[in-house]
Amino acid sequence: MAVTAADVLFWLLALCAGVSGWRVFATDSMVRASFLLLLSFLSVAGIMLLLAAPYIGIATVFMMAVEMMVMALFMVMFMMNPAGLNPMMMVHQHKLAIGAGVLAFLGLTAAILLTDLPSDPVPADRAVVHDLGIELLGDSMLVFETAGVTLLATMIGAVVLSSRRGRYGDADTGSRPPGLEPGGDPAGREPEEGGGGHHHHHH
Amino acid sequence: MTLTSVLIVASALVGIGLYGALSQQSFVMLMMGLELMLNGVLLAVIGFWSFGLGGAPEGQLFAIIVMAVMAVEMAIGFALVVAVYRKKQADMTEALETLKN
Image (tube, rainbow over all chains, first blue to last red; front, side, top):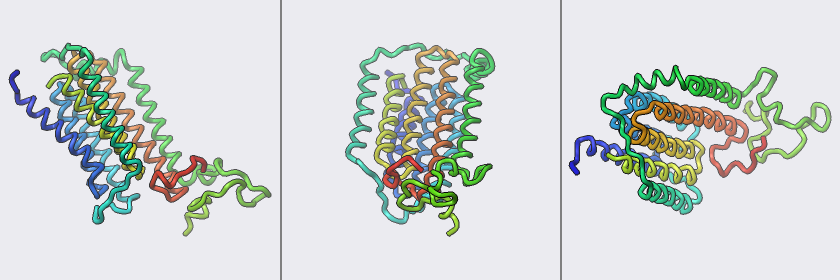
């Protein structure tokens, strides 16, 4: 079987996707981790371009570039070690996780190798992006619109979950038990640390 | 570049993502593992579409749905991280022993 340029490019991108995906969990810097994940996504997007899916490939590039920027921002906001100045290895159940990952890979690979896979490639002259557009605004419009409404619900949910104050007071008012006497401390168990709702934010 | 090789690469990404999602203590790193798994799923979907469907557009539509799932997971995940951090000053999985409050 002749090795074409597309084959070489595919295996290079595959190697890049896999190695950078692994390095995400092996690097000391969390910002670097999110950019490595971006590299992995970009490699997969390149493979998708090779697989005759230009629209999905380019959409992945745009979406993941923005998403990983957000991720890097969150890293800087939340993490104690965003710059990677100290060695960092924050894992639990490490052996189990490695085992599960390897088992998933081997199991899926075995399933792939043992399955009689379909063979009906995309014809070279097929206008795939045109087809997708007709499909999105034609037969599958309901699916497409449902995805849009789901994203809207996600936006609302994200704002509700992350906002400090709702329209009728603190955002967690409804999830705190009422006091034993009027105006008293909330009933029930106190969280060990950092809890207690609004008392915390003032210092 | 065959369907088999594309799917094996996809399963490698799923395996690495599963390792990350199970092993990482920090919420954001855990979400990176989930994203990596979905990355593999996306590659597998496009692989099947490219080699097995004769270019039927429904395969691409499914890939778009997977991407929407990725976006939803990120947005809700980060919102939950913010909410948990605000309540408990926690950014590690071990710091949470209960889902209440």
